[in-house]
Amino acid sequence: MSVDIQQQTESDSQVAFVRTAGFLGLVVAVTGILINVVFESAGPAPNAPIEEVVAFISERTLSLQIGNGLRMAVAGLLPVFAVGVYIWLGPLGDGWRMVGMLGLAMVPVAGIIANSAGTVALWRLPSLADQPELATMLWSNTVVLFYLLQVPYAVGVAGFSLAGRAAARMPRWLWTLGLLFGATGFSTTAGINVVVTRDWIGGLALSGYLLLLVWLAAVSIRLIRSSQGGRDSATHAT
Image (tube, rainbow, N blue to C red; front, side, top):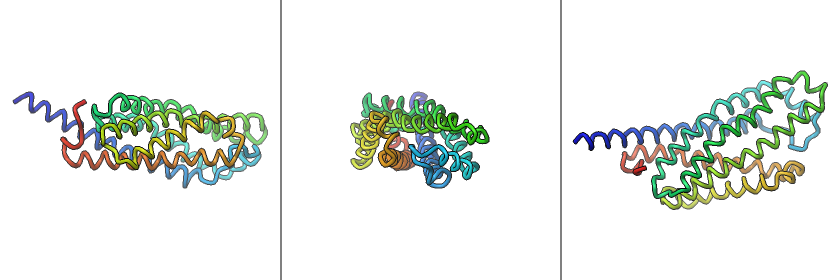
């Protein structure tokens, strides 16, 4: 009897964790939309003249600071989301679910580094206009680091998508979307030298983040819905 009670308690705890991970994933997705559509929309092209970049930062300082802070704030939510997906997929996800969890767990580390360049630019804004070399270095670092951030995202999303397919926990359109984003991320980083020197390619590469946000939101909703369906439908033995 005590063993059954312990197993039920552990399963209920997993249900609660999966539900929490789903809600946090939605927070990440919604925050990403707000940052890209509201706070940092219509920014200069990656290869824009540095004078245009400095003018943009000067005009949108407060908005950019909010976006910068929000990005830092939600970075720590991704590992919780990743563990929730790992539990939800269960052992049928095979080793791919471990790949997915490790990939998304690396995002906060890489993301904070990438976001730090933007933080420094906003912090040292008064100096940028008088020091174009410094401004160019900060802007270039920010652009390259944010493109390269697609590597851990691509590993995580592709890994979880393959696991979702193996475990039959994701519909075809969802794991296909995840693999498409993974391919986009790897292509972007493999061709980073072309991406940062061709504005239209850079814009196309950044659109890959839209696929990521849709995937995050869709998986988060599935985590929430599966946990509401009861402990047997929410989790597998891990």
